Length: 153
Image (cartoon, rainbow, N blue to C red; front, side, top):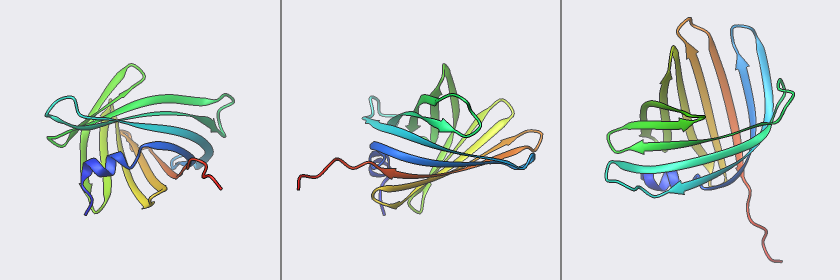
């Protein structure tokens, strides 16, 4: 069984991402393509397991402009997490079980649950479910392929 630190370090690299989103209440879907770069930051204190920083850019079908951003995920040794994104810090918890990482975070009346796992060394998959207090739900699926450096022939 892989340990959590090794699992997090496996995320490092450049990824091409296909995204599918479904807005269940209105029956609307959206597709998009993103390119993401993930970096690992070693723990700076005993209470931190590790930190991943992610930057992304791409497009989504419903937006008429490029989609880009960045976030930082900090996993704490006590099972809690922090997500730093766009001048805000979200808190939550995580669970690492059966080679998959599940993140749960809260913002206002939104609860977000993200599950991340690898289908192979260079294939990562994620599902994200966002629920509002009023019962509205959005579901997202991501399939991501690592961009490998060119090999000398």
